[in-house]
Length: 315
Image 1 (cartoon, rainbow, N blue to C red):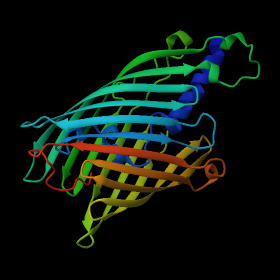
Image 2 (image 1 turned 30 degrees about the horizontal axis):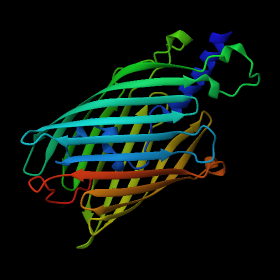
Image 3 (image 1 turned 90 degrees about the vertical axis):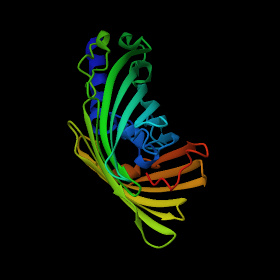
Image 4 (image 1 turned 90 degrees about the horizontal axis):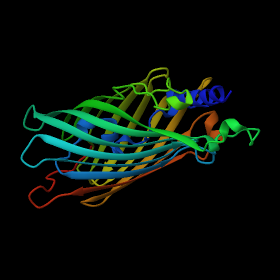
């Protein structure tokens, strides 16, 4: 009986992951491109980092909350980029905490064009808090344990083509497709499915001090529809970014979809510090039950006089 109940609970969590939240999702992938594509490591040419906090479906109990910290840079005098990431993603009783190391190699295709290849080794800790699962009978012996957890190894890879005002990338997460490692609870079939990303964007000058940055992201994971993000940001004086976008075919449950409007702002406070905020507004039935989704980013660039950025970094 216990195994059946736990297997059912895990199955529901996997369904949620397959359709909506297998990985932490970020409304503004520009806030943390390293999370999507490991080949991004070192592409800014200096030591950079971001901290992102995302609270999703505000007002709903057990809604996803995600924290992420990523750091990366280019080894001076080389074509090698290195990166390090930490993240924590909590969806109801399911928590995934991970740390990863990134290696990227950058090829010079022209004076201002580079092609990078990246690989990322990941260790995830997956845990399920059974005491957070709502049951009618609180004395049910099937749920006397508090939680189960396991460490799960994985890998991600990607390619990234970029120049000052253009980029394109392809990447895949969960190359190893590991299971959650909770075999002691009969959940050995619960696994991460490969997730594929394709991204591209460019900057188009509109005047001396104003530009526009259109971009697109397509995401596919087995068992779910393709999710497409269409975004555009106006850029003022290479410091202030004001954007809007729409995410299409975002599955909310097994019966329906929900398109999402995303509003964002990013500001370079000083040459080394960036702040960003985005808000998701659900355009159909989900919007009746939540107060939307908030995402906050703090980014930094560290450099000496020898390595100082010679031009704005739009990506």
